[in-house]
Length: 146
Image 1: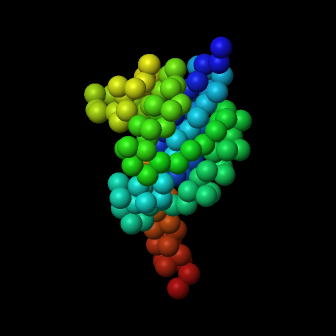
Image 2: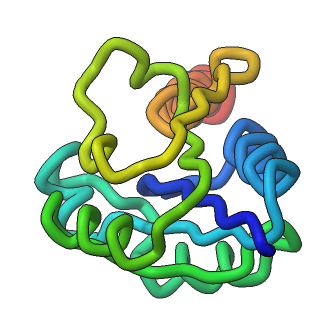
């Protein structure tokens, strides 16, 4: 009998923390479904500058990762709950930053496993670091190439 695993999120700017979570999730079972937030849902949650990568790009990248068997999109809590109820995962893997918080659809999950963040990686931190590096490069250019 196959063991079904579910992970969900934006997975906007893919980093090694995402890859580690997905590989870990897949190691817990036979079939990994990743439910991705739609562009509209990410913009609503994180602001007009997000997502960086649209859902076509994010979905294509996700579908081509070795650990991932299937990708679905959801644009509301209700749609995510419907995915969970239809899919009936044996295990749902969620980032540990959700510990102690309300997890949408948790009542329909057989088991929730929290995955600890690697090296404090996050998409927001990755983007902030990139912006800061760009500022430093621009300052350097302004000072040395007048």
